[in-house]
Image (cartoon, rainbow, N blue to C red; front, top):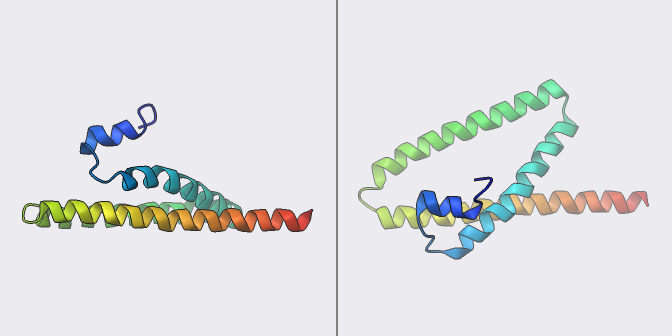
Length: 116
């Protein structure tokens, strides 16, 4: 993923039928995830921050395992619908995380401007 960038997604999933999802995901999720990690690290004590991140990763993993089981059960019957739903939900998630990232940046800029 690091060296091939967006080409690695095509290698894993094939050509994207919907270009918007392929463009929006990496651009929006990266800054949002990094910003959230920095905020958690600054607001909590080191041990609490590690625990919060560990709980978030564990919950994410459990949700992904559950969704994978549902996906494997539903996919043979409605493959096209499932793939389209996954792409739409991926875009919605990217936009949500991106919105949080923009909000964090705007609050940071506002705080910075107030200090000047």
